[in-house]
Length: 409
Image (spheres, one colour):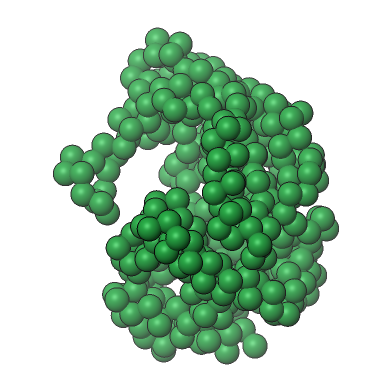
């Protein structure tokens, strides 16, 4: 089994390496570097997906992978997705290395020392679920433990040896030791809603503001300490941040770069759980706590799926803000009026209108052209994401990219 798995893995790794070495990748890097430096470029276009999406589970499911060993299977999937992304023909960069994460220690029971279990009554993959909040009373806050930066180097070495022996001669293996508190784990928003419960969190803002402030301060300090420990250990690298390889004015990413400071990197933060919270409460009960974490980085990207249309003035408080998400629910023109050309305008058109519910080029072109017109003068890119289905027709992504390119030219 192992020899056959390695043969299969080498085949897809080799193909991925060939794609990553194409001259087009350098052209894409230059495009994104200039775009994110707020220079005038053509509008970059991406069409991506997350591994939680239904169609991705169907197309790149375990059953559709050829490797049997779960370790090799995971990397086979990674390479096949990269190959498919290249075939889509968008502006996604394919890097000529593969990452290997050194496992963490001490967070087996949850990032904050308590279980954040997702409750799914029927236990069916793809069904909706909800978190069972472990902080049901304010006394339960005493159970929380700030996440430490501890790594299982022995497990990391075993995994490295296994992967290197299989494909180490095909591409570099980038060993990643960045902290657990990064991206969604560093924005406070994601985890405070799981710890306390989303509805209860909203109630707390009115009924228990002092207790909530103490919880948020605890989380802020825990994240800052976790990040500082990782930086002191030299575990931030050029591949340990968000969009490092496509952010202007920063050192381009390369594997195993060695230690870097957060103020040399780009960070990603969001506030999806605060989508329905007023700008005033967003500031009081989140942004003031996020700000010290975010501003450790050279540049920051803010936003994922939440509508930030009424909070852009608030976000201007961040001294290192560079990129703002404009989501399907946002008013594109209203956002453009506020963002202007001061920040990168990351527009995410509604995937349902684009590719998930039928494929209607007239509808797509009308929406895209209106969005481009509404954001005229902004430093915009178009990012199709959160695709839950392509109704069995994976060719839609490539056709969508071709259509949008015609609209932006």
